[in-house]
Image (cartoon, rainbow, N blue to C red):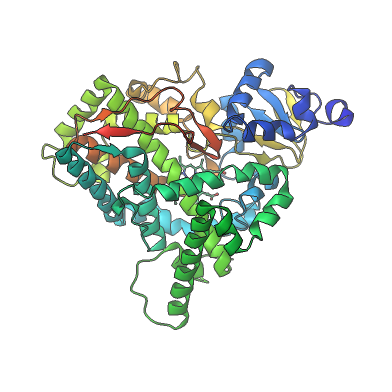
Length: 479
Ligand code: HEM
Protein backbone atom coordinates (compact mmCIF):
# COMPACT_ATOMS: atom_id res chain seq x y z
CA UNK A 1 0.00 0.00 0.00
CA UNK A 2 2.78 2.44 0.91
CA UNK A 3 4.62 1.70 -2.31
CA UNK A 4 1.49 2.21 -4.42
CA UNK A 5 0.60 5.49 -2.74
CA UNK A 6 4.04 7.10 -2.32
CA UNK A 7 6.66 5.40 -4.49
CA UNK A 8 4.80 4.40 -7.62
CA UNK A 9 5.27 6.14 -11.00
CA UNK A 10 1.53 7.02 -10.74
CA UNK A 11 1.85 8.48 -7.21
CA UNK A 12 1.58 12.05 -8.47
CA UNK A 13 -1.75 11.45 -10.20
CA UNK A 14 -4.57 12.83 -8.04
CA UNK A 15 -7.28 10.51 -6.70
CA UNK A 16 -8.42 8.76 -3.55
CA UNK A 17 -5.65 6.83 -1.79
CA UNK A 18 -7.77 3.73 -1.42
CA UNK A 19 -8.19 3.58 -5.23
CA UNK A 20 -4.39 3.80 -5.58
CA UNK A 21 -4.00 0.93 -3.13
CA UNK A 22 -6.55 -1.62 -4.30
CA UNK A 23 -8.70 -2.68 -7.26
CA UNK A 24 -11.40 -3.42 -4.70
CA UNK A 25 -12.24 0.29 -4.79
CA UNK A 26 -13.68 0.12 -8.32
CA UNK A 27 -15.07 -3.37 -7.75
CA UNK A 28 -16.97 -2.06 -4.74
CA UNK A 29 -18.73 0.56 -6.87
CA UNK A 30 -19.19 -1.91 -9.72
CA UNK A 31 -20.93 -4.58 -7.70
CA UNK A 32 -22.85 -2.64 -5.05
CA UNK A 33 -25.63 -0.07 -5.35
CA UNK A 34 -26.54 -1.09 -8.89
CA UNK A 35 -23.13 -0.82 -10.56
CA UNK A 36 -22.60 2.90 -10.82
CA UNK A 37 -18.82 3.28 -10.85
CA UNK A 38 -19.23 5.66 -13.82
CA UNK A 39 -20.98 8.13 -11.47
CA UNK A 40 -18.20 7.81 -8.90
CA UNK A 41 -15.63 8.51 -11.64
CA UNK A 42 -17.57 11.67 -12.52
CA UNK A 43 -17.55 12.76 -8.85
CA UNK A 44 -13.80 12.09 -8.63
CA UNK A 45 -13.16 14.28 -11.68
CA UNK A 46 -15.18 17.08 -10.08
CA UNK A 47 -13.02 16.78 -6.98
CA UNK A 48 -9.54 16.05 -8.39
CA UNK A 49 -9.47 17.46 -11.95
CA UNK A 50 -9.15 16.10 -15.51
CA UNK A 51 -6.58 13.34 -14.78
CA UNK A 52 -7.34 10.93 -11.94
CA UNK A 53 -6.10 7.59 -10.67
CA UNK A 54 -9.00 5.16 -10.29
CA UNK A 55 -7.03 1.96 -9.58
CA UNK A 56 -3.41 1.02 -8.74
CA UNK A 57 -2.62 0.78 -12.47
CA UNK A 58 -5.40 2.81 -14.08
CA UNK A 59 -5.96 6.45 -14.99
CA UNK A 60 -9.15 8.12 -16.18
CA UNK A 61 -9.30 11.33 -18.22
CA UNK A 62 -12.16 13.80 -18.62
CA UNK A 63 -10.77 16.52 -20.90
CA UNK A 64 -12.71 15.94 -24.17
CA UNK A 65 -9.76 17.19 -26.23
CA UNK A 66 -7.84 14.04 -25.25
CA UNK A 67 -10.35 11.61 -26.78
CA UNK A 68 -8.94 11.70 -30.31
CA UNK A 69 -5.41 11.16 -28.99
CA UNK A 70 -6.32 7.71 -27.63
CA UNK A 71 -9.24 6.52 -29.76
CA UNK A 72 -8.11 7.14 -33.33
CA UNK A 73 -7.18 5.28 -36.48
CA UNK A 74 -3.59 4.06 -36.30
CA UNK A 75 -3.52 4.37 -32.50
CA UNK A 76 -0.79 2.29 -30.87
CA UNK A 77 -2.84 1.90 -27.70
CA UNK A 78 -4.15 -1.65 -27.29
CA UNK A 79 -7.19 -2.78 -25.34
CA UNK A 80 -6.54 -3.48 -21.67
CA UNK A 81 -6.16 -7.28 -21.21
CA UNK A 82 -7.27 -7.18 -17.56
CA UNK A 83 -10.47 -5.39 -18.51
CA UNK A 84 -11.39 -7.21 -21.73
CA UNK A 85 -10.30 -10.78 -20.90
CA UNK A 86 -13.01 -10.84 -18.24
CA UNK A 87 -15.68 -10.88 -20.95
CA UNK A 88 -14.59 -14.43 -21.73
CA UNK A 89 -14.71 -14.07 -25.51
CA UNK A 90 -11.10 -15.11 -26.18
CA UNK A 91 -9.90 -14.07 -29.61
CA UNK A 92 -13.08 -12.26 -30.72
CA UNK A 93 -12.49 -8.96 -32.53
CA UNK A 94 -14.11 -7.04 -29.68
CA UNK A 95 -12.08 -8.45 -26.83
CA UNK A 96 -8.68 -9.36 -28.19
CA UNK A 97 -6.03 -7.04 -26.74
CA UNK A 98 -3.72 -7.64 -29.70
CA UNK A 99 -4.04 -4.91 -32.34
CA UNK A 100 -2.47 -7.27 -34.89
CA UNK A 101 -4.98 -10.10 -34.34
CA UNK A 102 -7.77 -7.55 -34.24
CA UNK A 103 -6.74 -6.05 -37.58
CA UNK A 104 -6.97 -9.40 -39.37
CA UNK A 105 -10.24 -10.51 -37.72
CA UNK A 106 -11.84 -7.13 -38.27
CA UNK A 107 -10.80 -7.11 -41.93
CA UNK A 108 -12.50 -10.50 -42.37
CA UNK A 109 -15.75 -9.18 -40.87
CA UNK A 110 -15.76 -5.66 -42.36
CA UNK A 111 -17.42 -6.52 -45.71
CA UNK A 112 -20.45 -7.89 -43.89
CA UNK A 113 -21.04 -4.67 -41.97
CA UNK A 114 -20.10 -2.05 -44.57
CA UNK A 115 -22.60 0.68 -45.44
CA UNK A 116 -23.01 -0.81 -48.91
CA UNK A 117 -23.91 -4.20 -47.47
CA UNK A 118 -26.35 -2.60 -45.02
CA UNK A 119 -28.07 -0.80 -47.90
CA UNK A 120 -28.24 -4.07 -49.86
CA UNK A 121 -29.84 -5.82 -46.88
CA UNK A 122 -32.07 -2.95 -45.76
CA UNK A 123 -35.07 -5.25 -46.32
CA UNK A 124 -34.03 -7.26 -43.26
CA UNK A 125 -34.34 -4.15 -41.10
CA UNK A 126 -37.56 -3.02 -42.81
CA UNK A 127 -39.17 -6.41 -42.19
CA UNK A 128 -38.45 -6.23 -38.45
CA UNK A 129 -39.74 -2.68 -38.14
CA UNK A 130 -42.84 -3.68 -40.04
CA UNK A 131 -43.51 -6.41 -37.44
CA UNK A 132 -43.36 -3.89 -34.60
CA UNK A 133 -45.58 -1.56 -36.63
CA UNK A 134 -48.15 -4.36 -36.89
CA UNK A 135 -47.98 -4.96 -33.14
CA UNK A 136 -48.64 -1.26 -32.50
CA UNK A 137 -51.48 -1.22 -34.98
CA UNK A 138 -53.08 -4.24 -33.31
CA UNK A 139 -52.66 -2.65 -29.88
CA UNK A 140 -54.35 0.50 -31.19
CA UNK A 141 -57.39 -1.50 -32.27
CA UNK A 142 -57.56 -3.33 -28.94
CA UNK A 143 -56.80 -0.28 -26.78
CA UNK A 144 -53.74 -2.04 -25.30
CA UNK A 145 -50.36 -0.76 -24.17
CA UNK A 146 -47.17 -1.85 -25.92
CA UNK A 147 -43.92 -2.62 -24.13
CA UNK A 148 -41.59 -0.65 -26.39
CA UNK A 149 -38.61 -1.17 -24.09
CA UNK A 150 -38.54 -4.81 -25.15
CA UNK A 151 -40.16 -4.27 -28.55
CA UNK A 152 -37.33 -2.00 -29.69
CA UNK A 153 -34.70 -4.38 -28.33
CA UNK A 154 -36.42 -7.22 -30.18
CA UNK A 155 -35.81 -5.26 -33.40
CA UNK A 156 -32.04 -5.22 -32.64
CA UNK A 157 -31.92 -8.92 -31.80
CA UNK A 158 -34.03 -10.08 -34.74
CA UNK A 159 -32.06 -7.87 -37.11
CA UNK A 160 -28.59 -9.05 -36.08
CA UNK A 161 -29.55 -12.73 -35.84
CA UNK A 162 -31.17 -12.61 -39.27
CA UNK A 163 -28.60 -10.30 -40.90
CA UNK A 164 -25.47 -11.76 -39.28
CA UNK A 165 -26.28 -15.38 -38.40
CA UNK A 166 -28.87 -16.24 -41.04
CA UNK A 167 -31.08 -17.62 -38.25
CA UNK A 168 -33.53 -15.08 -36.86
CA UNK A 169 -34.51 -15.42 -33.19
CA UNK A 170 -37.98 -14.02 -34.07
CA UNK A 171 -38.47 -12.28 -30.71
CA UNK A 172 -40.88 -9.87 -32.41
CA UNK A 173 -43.28 -12.79 -32.91
CA UNK A 174 -43.49 -13.52 -29.21
CA UNK A 175 -46.20 -11.90 -27.10
CA UNK A 176 -43.67 -10.57 -24.57
CA UNK A 177 -41.00 -9.74 -27.19
CA UNK A 178 -38.76 -12.47 -25.73
CA UNK A 179 -38.30 -10.86 -22.31
CA UNK A 180 -36.45 -13.93 -21.04
CA UNK A 181 -33.66 -13.36 -23.59
CA UNK A 182 -33.08 -9.85 -22.23
CA UNK A 183 -33.30 -11.03 -18.61
CA UNK A 184 -30.59 -13.56 -19.45
CA UNK A 185 -28.25 -10.98 -20.92
CA UNK A 186 -28.82 -8.72 -17.96
CA UNK A 187 -28.29 -11.44 -15.36
CA UNK A 188 -24.91 -12.28 -16.87
CA UNK A 189 -23.84 -8.60 -16.90
CA UNK A 190 -22.44 -8.24 -13.35
CA UNK A 191 -20.23 -11.34 -13.77
CA UNK A 192 -17.68 -9.35 -15.75
CA UNK A 193 -16.88 -7.11 -12.75
CA UNK A 194 -16.31 -10.16 -10.51
CA UNK A 195 -14.14 -11.80 -13.18
CA UNK A 196 -12.00 -8.67 -13.46
CA UNK A 197 -11.37 -8.65 -9.73
CA UNK A 198 -11.03 -12.41 -9.24
CA UNK A 199 -10.03 -14.07 -12.56
CA UNK A 200 -10.14 -17.57 -11.02
CA UNK A 201 -13.93 -17.18 -10.79
CA UNK A 202 -14.02 -16.93 -14.57
CA UNK A 203 -12.18 -20.24 -15.01
CA UNK A 204 -14.57 -21.82 -12.51
CA UNK A 205 -17.64 -20.42 -14.29
CA UNK A 206 -16.42 -21.49 -17.74
CA UNK A 207 -15.92 -25.03 -16.50
CA UNK A 208 -19.34 -25.52 -14.89
CA UNK A 209 -20.96 -28.53 -16.57
CA UNK A 210 -24.03 -27.45 -18.56
CA UNK A 211 -26.40 -29.65 -16.50
CA UNK A 212 -25.28 -27.89 -13.30
CA UNK A 213 -25.48 -24.41 -14.88
CA UNK A 214 -29.05 -25.13 -15.94
CA UNK A 215 -29.91 -26.17 -12.38
CA UNK A 216 -28.22 -23.08 -10.89
CA UNK A 217 -30.12 -20.53 -12.98
CA UNK A 218 -32.89 -20.64 -15.55
CA UNK A 219 -31.29 -17.70 -17.41
CA UNK A 220 -27.85 -19.31 -17.44
CA UNK A 221 -29.49 -22.48 -18.76
CA UNK A 222 -31.21 -20.63 -21.59
CA UNK A 223 -27.95 -18.80 -22.42
CA UNK A 224 -26.16 -22.15 -22.75
CA UNK A 225 -28.97 -23.45 -24.92
CA UNK A 226 -28.60 -20.44 -27.25
CA UNK A 227 -24.88 -21.13 -27.42
CA UNK A 228 -25.50 -24.78 -28.28
CA UNK A 229 -27.93 -23.82 -31.05
CA UNK A 230 -25.45 -21.32 -32.41
CA UNK A 231 -22.75 -23.99 -32.43
CA UNK A 232 -25.04 -26.37 -34.34
CA UNK A 233 -25.73 -23.64 -36.90
CA UNK A 234 -21.99 -23.12 -37.46
CA UNK A 235 -21.33 -26.85 -37.75
CA UNK A 236 -24.15 -27.13 -40.33
CA UNK A 237 -22.78 -24.26 -42.44
CA UNK A 238 -19.26 -25.69 -42.15
CA UNK A 239 -20.34 -29.17 -43.29
CA UNK A 240 -22.16 -27.69 -46.29
CA UNK A 241 -19.08 -25.73 -47.28
CA UNK A 242 -16.71 -28.66 -46.60
CA UNK A 243 -18.87 -30.94 -48.77
CA UNK A 244 -18.52 -28.45 -51.61
CA UNK A 245 -22.34 -28.18 -51.83
CA UNK A 246 -23.44 -24.87 -53.33
CA UNK A 247 -24.70 -22.90 -50.35
CA UNK A 248 -27.71 -20.82 -51.38
CA UNK A 249 -28.05 -19.07 -48.04
CA UNK A 250 -27.07 -15.46 -47.54
CA UNK A 251 -23.46 -14.80 -46.45
CA UNK A 252 -23.31 -14.75 -42.65
CA UNK A 253 -20.47 -13.95 -40.26
CA UNK A 254 -19.79 -17.70 -40.24
CA UNK A 255 -19.40 -17.89 -44.04
CA UNK A 256 -17.08 -14.93 -43.75
CA UNK A 257 -14.95 -16.46 -40.97
CA UNK A 258 -14.93 -19.93 -42.55
CA UNK A 259 -13.42 -18.54 -45.74
CA UNK A 260 -9.61 -19.01 -45.53
CA UNK A 261 -9.23 -16.26 -48.15
CA UNK A 262 -11.41 -13.77 -46.27
CA UNK A 263 -8.39 -11.50 -45.89
CA UNK A 264 -4.61 -11.73 -45.86
CA UNK A 265 -3.38 -13.51 -42.73
CA UNK A 266 -6.85 -14.82 -41.81
CA UNK A 267 -6.78 -18.18 -40.08
CA UNK A 268 -10.15 -19.96 -39.95
CA UNK A 269 -11.11 -19.95 -36.25
CA UNK A 270 -12.35 -23.01 -34.37
CA UNK A 271 -16.11 -23.57 -34.12
CA UNK A 272 -16.03 -22.42 -30.47
CA UNK A 273 -14.14 -19.27 -31.43
CA UNK A 274 -16.74 -18.53 -34.08
CA UNK A 275 -19.52 -19.09 -31.57
CA UNK A 276 -17.80 -16.61 -29.22
CA UNK A 277 -17.41 -14.10 -32.06
CA UNK A 278 -21.09 -14.33 -32.88
CA UNK A 279 -22.16 -13.98 -29.25
CA UNK A 280 -20.03 -10.92 -28.80
CA UNK A 281 -21.67 -9.42 -31.87
CA UNK A 282 -25.11 -10.33 -30.55
CA UNK A 283 -24.38 -8.77 -27.14
CA UNK A 284 -22.80 -5.70 -28.73
CA UNK A 285 -25.79 -5.17 -31.02
CA UNK A 286 -28.64 -5.69 -28.56
CA UNK A 287 -28.85 -3.17 -25.75
CA UNK A 288 -26.73 -0.48 -27.40
CA UNK A 289 -29.10 -0.11 -30.36
CA UNK A 290 -32.10 -0.89 -28.15
CA UNK A 291 -31.14 1.87 -25.68
CA UNK A 292 -30.60 4.46 -28.41
CA UNK A 293 -34.04 3.78 -29.90
CA UNK A 294 -35.76 3.59 -26.51
CA UNK A 295 -34.29 6.87 -25.25
CA UNK A 296 -35.05 8.70 -28.48
CA UNK A 297 -38.63 7.40 -28.66
CA UNK A 298 -39.35 7.97 -24.98
CA UNK A 299 -38.05 11.55 -25.10
CA UNK A 300 -39.97 12.39 -28.27
CA UNK A 301 -43.22 10.98 -26.91
CA UNK A 302 -42.70 12.73 -23.57
CA UNK A 303 -42.03 16.10 -25.23
CA UNK A 304 -44.99 17.39 -27.28
CA UNK A 305 -43.05 20.21 -28.98
CA UNK A 306 -40.36 17.80 -30.24
CA UNK A 307 -43.01 15.26 -31.24
CA UNK A 308 -44.96 17.83 -33.28
CA UNK A 309 -41.86 19.10 -35.08
CA UNK A 310 -40.69 15.60 -35.95
CA UNK A 311 -44.16 14.56 -37.13
CA UNK A 312 -44.38 17.65 -39.36
CA UNK A 313 -41.01 16.88 -40.97
CA UNK A 314 -41.95 13.24 -41.61
CA UNK A 315 -45.40 14.15 -42.96
CA UNK A 316 -43.83 16.57 -45.43
CA UNK A 317 -41.19 14.06 -46.57
CA UNK A 318 -43.64 11.13 -46.82
CA UNK A 319 -47.17 12.41 -47.56
CA UNK A 320 -48.43 8.81 -47.84
CA UNK A 321 -48.04 7.21 -44.37
CA UNK A 322 -48.26 3.67 -45.71
CA UNK A 323 -45.15 3.72 -47.95
CA UNK A 324 -41.87 2.07 -46.99
CA UNK A 325 -39.65 4.79 -45.54
CA UNK A 326 -36.19 4.24 -47.00
CA UNK A 327 -33.08 4.70 -44.88
CA UNK A 328 -31.31 6.97 -47.37
CA UNK A 329 -34.26 9.37 -47.47
CA UNK A 330 -34.71 9.31 -43.70
CA UNK A 331 -31.07 10.02 -42.89
CA UNK A 332 -31.27 13.27 -44.90
CA UNK A 333 -34.03 14.71 -42.70
CA UNK A 334 -32.42 17.31 -40.41
CA UNK A 335 -34.81 17.15 -37.46
CA UNK A 336 -34.98 13.35 -37.39
CA UNK A 337 -31.16 13.31 -37.55
CA UNK A 338 -31.02 15.67 -34.57
CA UNK A 339 -33.39 13.36 -32.65
CA UNK A 340 -31.20 10.35 -33.51
CA UNK A 341 -28.08 12.16 -32.32
CA UNK A 342 -29.71 13.11 -29.03
CA UNK A 343 -30.84 9.49 -28.60
CA UNK A 344 -27.27 8.31 -29.13
CA UNK A 345 -25.86 11.04 -26.90
CA UNK A 346 -28.06 10.18 -23.92
CA UNK A 347 -27.88 6.40 -24.33
CA UNK A 348 -24.04 6.52 -24.41
CA UNK A 349 -23.40 3.21 -26.22
CA UNK A 350 -20.97 1.95 -23.57
CA UNK A 351 -21.50 4.02 -20.44
CA UNK A 352 -18.25 3.37 -18.60
CA UNK A 353 -14.63 3.69 -19.58
CA UNK A 354 -12.91 1.94 -22.50
CA UNK A 355 -9.47 1.17 -21.03
CA UNK A 356 -6.41 1.08 -23.26
CA UNK A 357 -2.76 0.36 -22.42
CA UNK A 358 -0.18 3.13 -22.78
CA UNK A 359 2.68 1.98 -24.98
CA UNK A 360 6.41 2.95 -24.97
CA UNK A 361 7.70 5.55 -24.20
CA UNK A 362 4.73 6.73 -22.14
CA UNK A 363 2.59 9.81 -22.61
CA UNK A 364 1.69 13.10 -21.03
CA UNK A 365 -1.89 14.35 -20.52
CA UNK A 366 -2.77 17.74 -19.00
CA UNK A 367 0.74 18.02 -17.52
CA UNK A 368 0.81 14.53 -15.94
CA UNK A 369 3.36 11.96 -17.14
CA UNK A 370 1.92 8.50 -17.54
CA UNK A 371 4.34 5.57 -17.90
CA UNK A 372 4.01 2.73 -20.44
CA UNK A 373 1.91 -0.20 -19.23
CA UNK A 374 -0.65 2.02 -17.48
CA UNK A 375 -4.31 1.47 -18.27
CA UNK A 376 -5.93 4.67 -19.42
CA UNK A 377 -9.52 5.36 -20.38
CA UNK A 378 -12.25 7.84 -21.18
CA UNK A 379 -16.01 7.47 -21.41
CA UNK A 380 -18.86 8.65 -23.61
CA UNK A 381 -20.77 9.39 -20.40
CA UNK A 382 -18.30 12.17 -19.53
CA UNK A 383 -17.89 13.30 -23.16
CA UNK A 384 -21.63 13.57 -23.82
CA UNK A 385 -22.30 15.47 -20.63
CA UNK A 386 -19.49 17.99 -20.88
CA UNK A 387 -21.37 21.26 -20.24
CA UNK A 388 -18.94 23.33 -22.36
CA UNK A 389 -20.11 21.50 -25.48
CA UNK A 390 -23.52 20.28 -24.40
CA UNK A 391 -25.03 22.97 -22.17
CA UNK A 392 -27.80 21.62 -19.96
CA UNK A 393 -26.51 18.14 -20.83
CA UNK A 394 -29.32 16.09 -19.30
CA UNK A 395 -31.94 17.73 -21.45
CA UNK A 396 -32.95 15.97 -24.68
CA UNK A 397 -32.65 18.91 -27.03
CA UNK A 398 -32.52 18.22 -30.79
CA UNK A 399 -32.13 21.96 -31.40
CA UNK A 400 -28.44 21.75 -30.46
CA UNK A 401 -27.86 19.84 -33.71
CA UNK A 402 -29.86 22.02 -36.08
CA UNK A 403 -27.42 24.80 -37.01
CA UNK A 404 -25.04 23.01 -39.45
CA UNK A 405 -21.74 24.73 -38.58
CA UNK A 406 -22.25 24.42 -34.81
CA UNK A 407 -23.40 20.81 -35.28
CA UNK A 408 -20.27 19.91 -37.24
CA UNK A 409 -18.13 21.17 -34.34
CA UNK A 410 -20.25 19.22 -31.85
CA UNK A 411 -19.89 15.99 -33.85
CA UNK A 412 -16.31 15.73 -32.59
CA UNK A 413 -17.62 15.21 -29.06
CA UNK A 414 -20.37 12.72 -29.90
CA UNK A 415 -18.69 9.33 -29.48
CA UNK A 416 -21.34 6.64 -28.82
CA UNK A 417 -19.56 4.26 -31.22
CA UNK A 418 -16.08 5.28 -29.98
CA UNK A 419 -13.53 6.17 -32.66
CA UNK A 420 -10.55 4.82 -34.55
CA UNK A 421 -9.61 1.27 -35.37
CA UNK A 422 -11.63 -0.24 -32.50
CA UNK A 423 -14.69 1.81 -33.30
CA UNK A 424 -17.99 -0.10 -33.50
CA UNK A 425 -18.13 -2.30 -36.58
CA UNK A 426 -21.95 -2.28 -36.47
CA UNK A 427 -22.35 1.50 -36.78
CA UNK A 428 -23.87 1.52 -40.31
CA UNK A 429 -26.32 -1.23 -39.35
CA UNK A 430 -27.23 0.53 -36.10
CA UNK A 431 -27.92 3.80 -37.94
CA UNK A 432 -30.12 1.99 -40.44
CA UNK A 433 -32.12 0.35 -37.64
CA UNK A 434 -32.52 3.57 -35.67
CA UNK A 435 -33.55 5.75 -38.63
CA UNK A 436 -35.96 3.24 -40.12
CA UNK A 437 -37.55 2.45 -36.73
CA UNK A 438 -37.99 6.04 -35.57
CA UNK A 439 -38.99 7.31 -39.00
CA UNK A 440 -41.55 4.57 -39.64
CA UNK A 441 -43.11 4.53 -36.18
CA UNK A 442 -43.35 8.32 -35.85
CA UNK A 443 -44.74 8.70 -39.37
CA UNK A 444 -47.47 6.16 -38.59
CA UNK A 445 -48.17 6.98 -34.92
CA UNK A 446 -48.40 10.64 -33.98
CA UNK A 447 -50.42 10.40 -30.76
CA UNK A 448 -48.46 7.89 -28.69
CA UNK A 449 -48.63 8.40 -24.93
CA UNK A 450 -45.81 7.20 -22.67
CA UNK A 451 -46.69 5.62 -19.33
CA UNK A 452 -45.02 7.84 -16.68
CA UNK A 453 -41.50 6.90 -15.53
CA UNK A 454 -39.73 8.19 -12.42
CA UNK A 455 -36.16 9.43 -12.11
CA UNK A 456 -35.23 6.05 -10.56
CA UNK A 457 -36.73 4.22 -13.53
CA UNK A 458 -34.55 6.26 -15.87
CA UNK A 459 -31.24 5.52 -14.12
CA UNK A 460 -28.56 3.46 -15.79
CA UNK A 461 -26.54 0.63 -14.28
CA UNK A 462 -23.21 -0.12 -15.92
CA UNK A 463 -22.71 -3.64 -17.25
CA UNK A 464 -20.57 -2.24 -20.07
CA UNK A 465 -23.73 -1.39 -21.99
CA UNK A 466 -26.10 0.61 -19.79
CA UNK A 467 -29.12 -1.20 -18.32
CA UNK A 468 -32.19 0.05 -16.49
CA UNK A 469 -32.53 -1.28 -12.90
CA UNK A 470 -34.29 -4.67 -12.74
CA UNK A 471 -37.22 -3.25 -10.79
CA UNK A 472 -37.55 -0.09 -12.89
CA UNK A 473 -40.78 0.46 -14.78
CA UNK A 474 -40.01 0.16 -18.48
CA UNK A 475 -41.01 2.34 -21.44
CA UNK A 476 -44.56 1.44 -22.48
CA UNK A 477 -46.87 3.36 -24.73
CA UNK A 478 -50.59 3.65 -25.22
CA UNK A 479 -51.37 3.92 -28.93
C1 HEM B 1 -26.40 2.32 -31.25
C2 HEM B 1 -25.82 1.15 -31.42
C3 HEM B 1 -24.41 0.82 -31.03
C4 HEM B 1 -23.53 1.51 -30.24
C5 HEM B 1 -23.75 2.85 -29.56
C6 HEM B 1 -22.30 0.75 -30.20
C7 HEM B 1 -21.16 1.13 -29.50
C8 HEM B 1 -19.95 0.46 -29.56
C9 HEM B 1 -18.74 0.90 -28.93
C10 HEM B 1 -18.59 2.12 -28.05
C11 HEM B 1 -17.76 0.01 -29.24
C12 HEM B 1 -16.30 0.04 -28.79
C13 HEM B 1 -16.14 -0.84 -27.57
C14 HEM B 1 -14.73 -0.86 -27.01
O1 HEM B 1 -13.89 -0.05 -27.39
O2 HEM B 1 -14.47 -1.74 -26.19
C15 HEM B 1 -18.36 -1.00 -30.06
C16 HEM B 1 -17.68 -2.07 -30.59
C17 HEM B 1 -18.29 -3.08 -31.29
N1 HEM B 1 -19.60 -3.13 -31.68
FE1 HEM B 1 -21.03 -1.73 -31.41
N2 HEM B 1 -22.47 -0.40 -30.93
C18 HEM B 1 -23.74 -0.37 -31.46
C19 HEM B 1 -24.30 -1.32 -32.28
C20 HEM B 1 -23.66 -2.43 -32.75
C21 HEM B 1 -24.22 -3.38 -33.68
C22 HEM B 1 -25.60 -3.28 -34.34
C23 HEM B 1 -23.30 -4.35 -33.84
C24 HEM B 1 -23.46 -5.54 -34.74
C25 HEM B 1 -22.65 -5.81 -35.68
C26 HEM B 1 -22.13 -4.01 -33.04
C27 HEM B 1 -20.96 -4.74 -32.96
C28 HEM B 1 -19.79 -4.31 -32.36
C29 HEM B 1 -18.55 -5.05 -32.39
C30 HEM B 1 -18.32 -6.42 -33.03
C31 HEM B 1 -17.60 -4.27 -31.72
C32 HEM B 1 -16.11 -4.58 -31.55
C33 HEM B 1 -15.42 -3.90 -32.72
C34 HEM B 1 -13.93 -4.03 -32.75
O3 HEM B 1 -13.27 -4.05 -31.69
O4 HEM B 1 -13.40 -4.08 -33.86
N3 HEM B 1 -22.39 -2.84 -32.39
N4 HEM B 1 -19.70 -0.71 -30.26
